[in-house]
Amino acid sequence: MLASSLVLVGLVGFVVLVYVVVVVGGGEAVGRTSSPLVSLSVLATALVALGFDPVQTRLEALASRVVAPEGQVSRTTRCGSWPRRSAAAMRRRSCPPHRPR
View 1: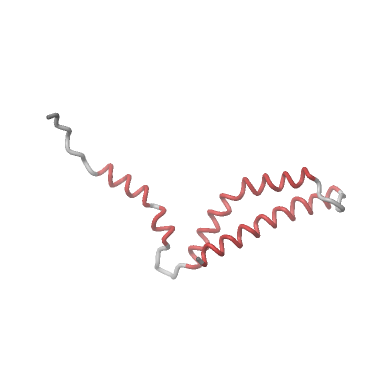
View 2 (view 1 turned 135 degrees about the vertical axis):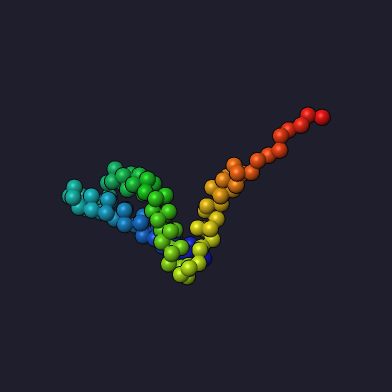
């Protein structure tokens, strides 16, 4: 629960930071500060959409390291490799040949 909260706070911070830098900073650079430009808002939305998944992945990894005590593996890390482990186990296991009746 704490890890999820840290990820949520980080994502909110990411969205706010991108919006402020692009819309407010871009408005200052253009010289229009009274109202935000729609094009800058669209650009900020596109940047958030493109960056959301990589930022979320990095924040989840960071939160797992912060929350999990030293030497323990978090549930996300442990379960994240399950598909690879089960596929490797299935490749090693040989199935008996099919015998027609």
